[in-house]
Image (cartoon, rainbow, N blue to C red):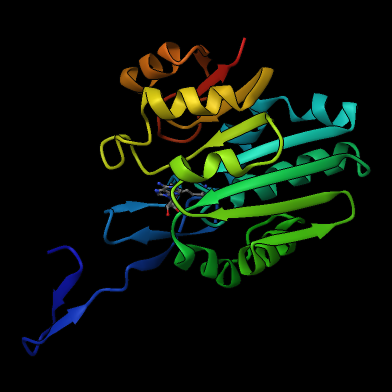
Amino acid sequence: MREVLKSMDGQLTQLPKIAPIVTGDGSASFYNNQVGETYHSRSGAAREAIEKFCRPSGLGRLAGQGRAVIYDICFGLGYNTAAALDMILECNPECLVDVYGFELDPSILEMTGQVTPPFNSYPLVREASKNLDATFGSASIKIFLGDVRQELDKAPRPADVVFFDPFSPCKEPELWSRELFRAIHSRMHPGAVLTTYSCASKVRQALDEAGFEVADGPCVGQRSTSTVAYRP
Ligand SMILES: C[S@@+](CC[C@H](N)C(=O)[O-])C[C@H]1O[C@@H](n2cnc3c(N)ncnc32)[C@H](O)[C@@H]1O
C-alpha cells in the first residue's frame, strides 16, 4: 500500500498524493505516490524541459517564421511549455504561438502556484493552469483537461511541435502506444517534430509503426538518450 504510512504510535496516515522534491538543478518538481514516479528527471526538472524537449524541436526556426503551434501532451506543471515560450519569444518577441496543453489531473495544475522555476513565461503557465486559458501578447495557452486520447482532436490547429511527456512506459503503456502515436501523427504538419524523454525500443517501434522517422535525441543527466521523431 504505497499511499498509506504507519506512524510511530501505530496510526495509519494517508500520504499526500503529490509530494514536493527538489531536483539536481535546484528546480522543484513532485513525486506522485499513486504512480510511484516523479514528474521530471531527478537530475534537473528545468534542464530536462530545455535540453530534452525544447532544444531538439526546432523552435528557433519556427520563431524565425513567426508562427508556432505546440502540443504539450501531459502538461503537468507546464515546464516544457514555459521553456518553449522563453526560447521562441527570446528569438522573436512578435512570434504568434499557440500552445495546446493536455492534462488529466487538475491537482497537478494547482501545484503551479507553489513552484518558481527559472522561466520568464511561467506566470502565463500559472494563469492557464488556473483558468485553462491564458493569453499574453502574441502567446496563448489553452489546456484541455481530460484523457489526451479523448481530448486530442479538440485542438483547433495542427501541430508544428509535440512534447510527449507521460509517466514511464511501464506505468502508462496505453499512452506509449501505436494507436496514440498514429492519432498524434495525423494532427501534425509534414516536417513537424515530436520530442520525448524515452528511448525504449518498444516506444521507438510504436513511433516507427505510426509513420514517424525516429532519431536519437540529446542525452541529459544520468538518464540515457532521448528520442526525436519527425513526421515525414
Ligand atoms: C511525467 S508528468 C509530465 C510533467 C510535465 N510535462 C511537466 O512539465 O510538469 C506526466 C503527466 O501526465 C499526466 N497524465 C497521465 N495520464 C494522462 C492522460 N491519459 N492524459 C493526459 N495527461 C495524463 C499526469 O497527470 C502528469 O501530470
